[in-house]
Length: 187
Ligand code: IMP
Image 1 (cartoon, helix red, strand yellow):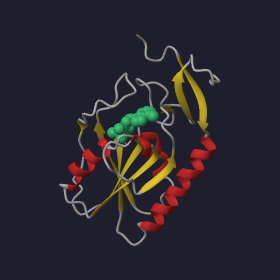
Image 2: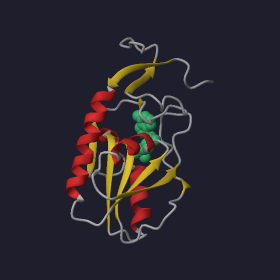
Image 3: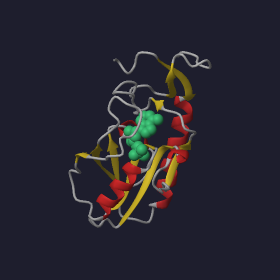
């Protein structure tokens, strides 16, 4: 069955709201890493590439980027509980000031796996930045260092976030629900 059929989108965070918050996060990183040699941002694929592309342009420091891939939810909206590396970093991170950039933290399993994996590679420092945080969904303890928006337990799409590969291109973020839900307004 097509996972997109029978779903409706409801506007949640506008492009302007997102851009303002991303600019503030960039300023915060610029401030916090101002005394260091360089900042190394690692985007978690696939969801974080849109956020990382905007964030890196708001950081007024020497900055380098890399990407790491982990398994996603595929065609479902629930986490299987198994995190799998699908693409490794291109460069070593030893002695670098690393910030791991994620689109959304849900159960916390992905970030816990990545922190455990990357800390073994001896970065000088390792912090986390997520555009969205759903703390009510945690099944393992995890607190991101930088958060764009703390949100309730909604399944959201847009600005890099997908449902079965769709909707990543939207410049805004929308709540995705079954279209038989009574409170929906289609976009
Ligand atoms: P966690 O391991 O459960 O914290 O999940 C993190 C990953 O799940 C994110 O990088 C997303 O790919 C995906 N995810 C979690 N919640 C959502 C959502 O509301 N919309 C789209 N993807 C989500």
